[in-house]
Image (cartoon, rainbow, N blue to C red; front, side, top):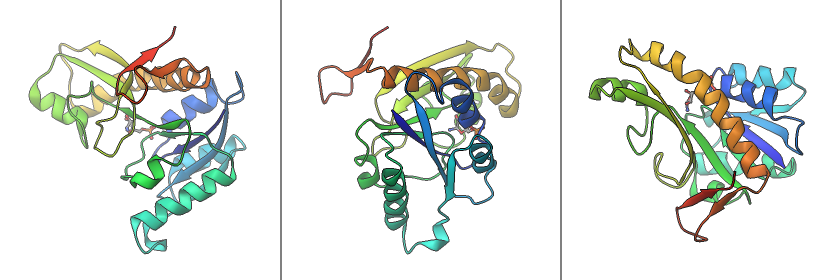
Length: 202
Ligand code: GRF
């Protein structure tokens, strides 16, 4: 299965995918795209010999055209599954329906709690005691798509958002590669078909 990754930032989740799934079990990270030409994620991709390209918003008349260009490039590289690994832009509905295996995202909270930006700060403000990570399919809403995998951690004295993110990182780096492996293996089903219920075969 050919996987395309979209990333806006540091790319530590991309690195986990490159280290843990790229070139194994028939999975190939074939392309990495970013909205930011300077995103370290692009350099990580190039270091791993993966095609990397940026699509800055200013180069396109609107977001839909930018998304079309990204989808076109990913299709040229025969991408089937798209992984959002810290991609900080909304995607158009046309982009979301353009990939046969879907588009998935990693979010640093236990959805449906704390969707959108600053999820960890939202969780701290709410004073939760259990934090976590969700990998989900992306639909047209903000972090509203069907949940594939979740993992939690109890933090009685969580510290600030940066400290919590530090504790969540290893969970993200486990969960996202795991979800990609499961999808590649054909172990993730919508059951019943077309519904938002996900059954994962272990
Ligand atoms: C992660 O915390 C992820 O949950 C969120 O964006 C961050 C990306 O980090 N969606 P990185 O660029 O993969 O290091």
